[in-house]
Length: 448
Image (cartoon, rainbow, N blue to C red; front, side, top):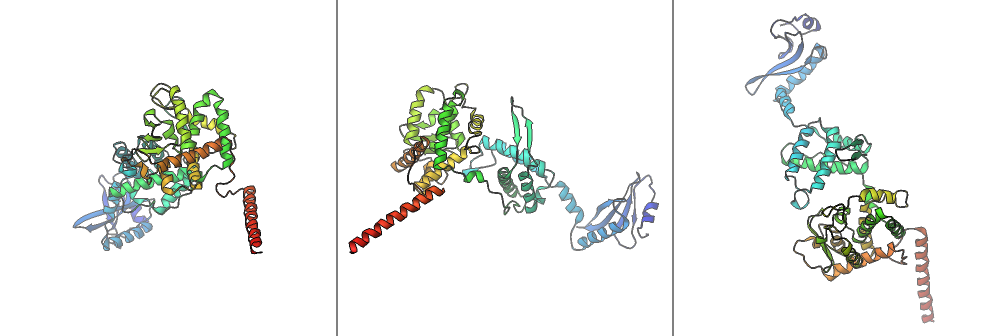
């Protein structure tokens, strides 16, 4: 057996059958010559009482010298008890991210993926998840193996979404429908969150041993920290009044007002049915929310507006769309038109929800009360056993809704919480000094 050199390899002619040329310097290292003339380097060894072969690569891509160095490394691993051929076989059989996504989507549609409270995910959530999988996860990670995902890979994936590498604008199957994918920090945060949940499921299935998303620093979604100031509420009120003067915006304007006065999610108001409205109990008894069934106290301004609306909206939904059994469908486009070019451009319905909670906090309601008003899971009002709301929650809803309603009407309140604008801070400081100066003067007079 000769030492494998370039001359020996080039001289190894093809025959009608493949054959091997073994190196006499490194036992187990050899060359395989195929009838087609193709030649490849390999190692041969024994593992678990059987002979195994491991192909290093083709001659031309590999030289005898580089193949020999690789063979020496591989044979060293064999001597340490490893089995490179078996590891490669397992790698080839390992599930790709795309294959795992397809499995996840099947289980998602079958109700096997549970969301909050151990309940199957809602269809709207499923649709959103599938959209993020198809628009971001598969294009950027689909060809990788699930078990090879790591924290650096996930971080790069997140940054690619932030940079807009998955942005897209294409026509969908719906009439005049388009899918517009922009990317950005918010999309990156939510998509990485979804990927983390998916990999937790992979962990449960035994496909991976640890979740690589854990510990990845996600960008903060600034939209969720935005709240309206008192002045912005007054601007919003004027925008609502102007929108009501335009026939096509009339319903949208009222939906915006109800979101502001209830702190409900956009979909909870748009899809609100009269069967969910308990005017006598001053409550919304929602059958389908992000948290499951939920009971929300209604403030008096909300109750009165719904009482006024009920005779003119006899359909299934409070805000009726086309037909008796369809909710209003033009909200999003109308919202964009109403807010475009205004001082509140960029405000989202969630900002109104966040602002409602912030006002409640400013009015010194407890965290538990605010959670109950908002329909958060930690608020005990979401319990399925509650049928009658106590006076405390009704009073809280009246106070918050009444305060916001007054702001929308243009009311200027003198005191609530410490404002951060310069004029308000100066006024508050002057008032503080004046009051304490008066107290000091009174104390001096008494002492005299």
